[in-house]
Structure formats: structure tokens, C-alpha cells
Length: 356
Image (cartoon, rainbow, N blue to C red; front, side, top):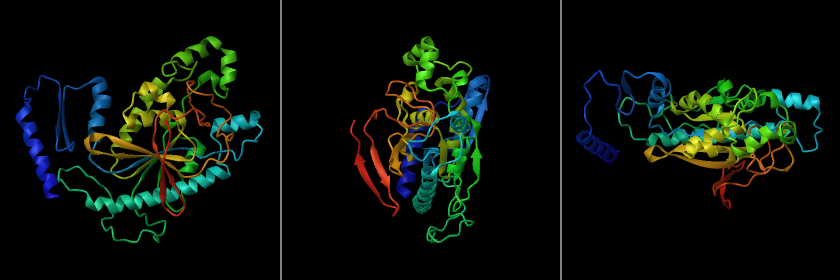
């Protein structure tokens, strides 16, 4: 710990030798003290005040992980007859099916396991005494036996965020871990406007000219009366700030279009290409902060996908590059090689290298 503090102080001295103190209050500036524990803002207006300042206040040096996943599956197999009533239920975000409930239980066990690891590891975090909390958790004794702890005695804190869709809320509602569930409409899937409830083939037949524009620019082509991905990015800004400012583990249960944008943010990849990010069912994206402000993103499979035709909604997704905007079966290939960790019921994991 002493070496880490000495290294930090050495870097601060080098920064001080290069930085120039601003004392002219007629200029616009933002001053950050002690790793964002204090901000001084002068003549900052517009988007800078709305987005940049809250982001600077939210960023911290905490080691908390962020877990992102889709809502559980609402149909049990691929033989379900899709009729008008089923489509309306899908649009409402109906309740989970048998497989979806299995995923909910597996997710609760996984979050419990990861939360306990976080509590144990945070004891090794170096305290820099900057005024910025790196844990924010009430339990300080890592020797507690969390495995037999009753559900009402929470072994760790966590911030749970979901869309307002019933299936997402149900996925994040756990009897053993009764955390408050923050329902946020900004996490709802991309609004398809006049095309809501229509499959891709139906949209192409109804408006081939507009569909051609969608294929050319899936990021900026807006659905009639709805949104485009660029609109989605703007409404997710407050959610990202909410995630960043947490010092305890964060769980986000949302939908494909939203998760694609969030993963692009945590991977620091071009957001314009987020439509090609694969978001499989029953899989958690575990994002952990690394040195230098980056995030490491891993895929953790909680339940093996047993049906190639099962879908959470009535919309089927064709092969890439057609964009993806809802909760559906993913059939496009992976864009990049990633390490896939399969979480099993015993709490262990095995690593597999996915081909490019």
C-alpha cells in the first residue's frame, strides 16, 4: 500500500510541474480536486453542464463490477404459434416462461457469488484517503460467512436497474436477494414507432425505400414515429452516469438495442458500429474496471441455449448486417474473439476461446 501511495504522489508532483493554475474567473473552466471528490465549475453552460459535469462527478476509482444482461426468455420453445394475442403480449413485455425463470434463478446465484467475491476483494483496495469512496458498503468484516446469511441480511450492496418491461423486472427480482429494483424507461428497447410489432420482412414489404436506407445506415435511420440508434444513445446518457457513479456492484437488465450501446461504451468501441454487437440470451456481460480508466468485458453463459428457434419476441432477426433492435434470437456471427466463461451450478467456470 505504501508503494502505491508513493507512486501516486510522485505522479501528482509531475503533473503539478506541468499544469498551469487558472485564476482568471472570466474564463470557462472545470477544476477537479482529489480524484473528483470536489469540482469547481465556472462559466460552464449547455451540454457541458448537462452531461460533462455530471460525468466528471460520477467517475470514480472504485473496483465495482457492472453486470449487463437481457431479460429472460418469455417463450419455452420454438413451436409456439405466433398469433395476434401473442404478439401483443410480446410488445407489452409479458411474463417469463420456464426457461426465463431458470435464468432468473441462475442470475441470482451468480450475482450472489460475484457479490461475495467483491466484498472479500475490496479489503485489499488501497485507501488513498482522497474523500472519494472506493467501496461505499456497510459491511467491513470480510470473514463473515455469507453463504448461510438469511435473505433479509444482505451480504453486500448492489444497484439494480431494469427497463419498465415486466419480463425485465421479473428477471431482476430475486427472493434471496431482495434488492430494490430501479425501473427506468430509458432502458426500454428501441422504439420502432409505426413499425412496432412488425417483422423485418413485413417492414421491407411495407416500405422498401425506407428499408433500403436502414440497411445503408442502421445507426442514424429513424423509424417513422420512433427512434434510431443515435436517439437511443442520447437517452442512455443519464443511465451511464448512474452506472458510473456507483461504488457497489451494478446489475442492468435490459434489451438488445440498449445493451449493444452499453457494451460499445464499456468496450470503448465506435458506437456507430454497435448494431453488430451480438447479445445472446441467458448470458451476462461482466464489466470490470482496469487501470487507466478502461473496462474489461467478459461474457458469462449462465444457461446453455437449447433451442435454435426459441425467441423472446415475435420478431426474427436475419443475418448481419441487418440491424438488431429488440429482444430476439441472435444468428449473426461474433465480430471478434472473446473469452467465454460458462458459469455452472457449483460456482466454477471453464474458459473457451471463441473463433473469429
